[in-house]
Length: 163
Image (tube, rainbow, N blue to C red; front, side, top):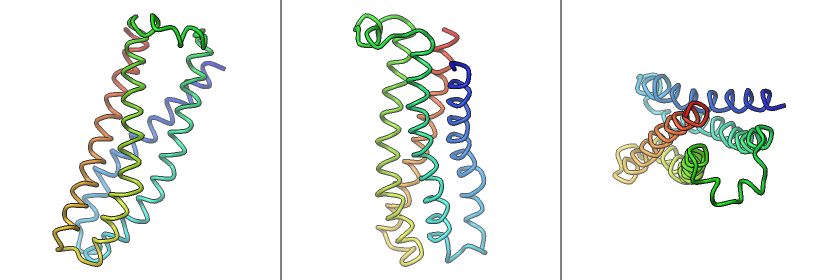
């Protein structure tokens, strides 16, 4: 059970981080092509909505498999509730990882339910407007922040297992 849970956890993280890397490395540059000149908003609305749904499903899977990983690795609920658990090396790295994940959920919520939809709404209707530019920039920076946070979690996940 432990190995299956870890496998699903890793695949989910890979899919989420890979999706953000694909967006930054492929979709954003493609959106600058003349073909999408007046359709950037519609393009990102379709892509963003699909990736957002997948991301939130992956977040749920990551939560479930993360808990399963801890419990099937031998950590008990009472141990996790003991403050001394969080002061050892494993607990310290887990503490950091969980807090970064909470931050990712907050940033994703702001990006997926406010900044992103507002930016795509304005991109096609009024692309030169100052508010459009601000929302695009906010949405872009929130996406970048989430990528950096996701890569940071990956680092701490490695430290959890390798010390």
